[in-house]
Image (cartoon, rainbow, N blue to C red; front, side):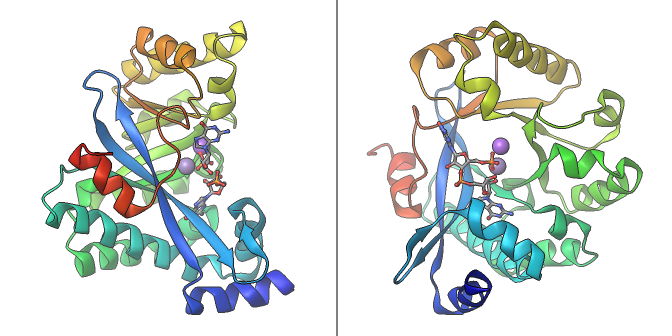
Length: 254
Ligand code: G
Ligand code: G
Ligand code: MN
Ligand code: NA
């Protein structure tokens, strides 16, 4: 109850913020996207990780208001980079299963795009495999509605859930994100390496882009480049940074 009450207040008090983790294309070695990651700095408790408060927000329904704030703030930042004359990069936003299930989700995305002026193709929604595969029939219709807005769709944490390749083929998805658990030990665990390269070649044959997350060292980076992974994200390349810091990186002085 402490968390629920303070979270309700945190949203109004401006204690929530977003950091942005760059996504780098392996062929051009340039930043092609950024994932918005929610941060909560409580005035007395200090940093409270999203893994702790997002489940609470999902249970008490606050995730809707928080999700709308995240969406608006991420779109505002992405458009601010555009207006500063920086290269167009996609903005990836994590989407809770609770948000995905709400009828009003399509309207709130359209609203965020209209209010900020961000081009829809620069917004990428990250949905977990579990959300999409559970109720695959109704999910397909919902994904189609989101896709019709012109936004991009990515499957997050790919490989950890229950995936059906035949459904994947029917979904209007643009990118698959290889879960960081397979990437972390990619150079020492032959099974992880096999899974990652299988996801890359399967994804490519379905004409999907592949993003590997959790890249923590040079060896993982080299392996992913050899396997023709499209984009990489992880602390070896850059930790999540502020909007201003990312602007500096896009200008080439970061
Ligand atoms: O940033 P960090 O690794 O601590 O994130 C932990 C978890 O919180 C990840 O699963 C991430 O997807 C999730 N997360 C981060 N930001 C958001 C957000 O804005 N909305 C939702 N729903 N989840 C988020
Ligand atoms: O579930 P999701 O994929 O959205 O979670 C992304 C989370 O992974 C973010 O909280 C981010 O802070 C974290 N992350 C990003 N890069 C790395 C990395 O290289 N190593 C580890 N361990 N975590 C990372
Ligand atoms: Mn994510
Ligand atoms: Na992930």
